[in-house]
Length: 154
Image (cartoon, rainbow, N blue to C red; front, side, top):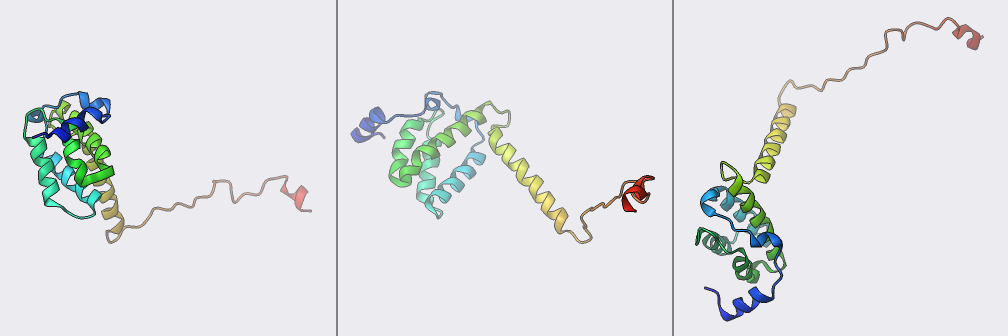
């Protein structure tokens, strides 16, 4: 699918070192990655673009070991300056996912855990009957006047 122009770009573009590592897509949970891809592309473009999202899905799913460098070249026309950071993030997540037993990148698992904790905290705070615990305690001897206090008050 690479054209002559793509081949020249592949040779002339400097890619991050992570791109030299292969990803086995059979070890990656594609459903999770597709959600991330769709969300990220929509954020970059400012709207949901099914054509670009599907193109990325096809490039990732097209081979057991996709070529991230080629993917970056092919997405450049759509994502412009955001293509390289997008591809680097995508590849880091895929590398992480293939080492995870569930095929889910640990970064996404951690983000989801944090989101659930924050949501639980919001629900707790907004639930009826919730009151913040405010303790205003005085030291046990606060009521007592020191013996030598009279020296300073007279």
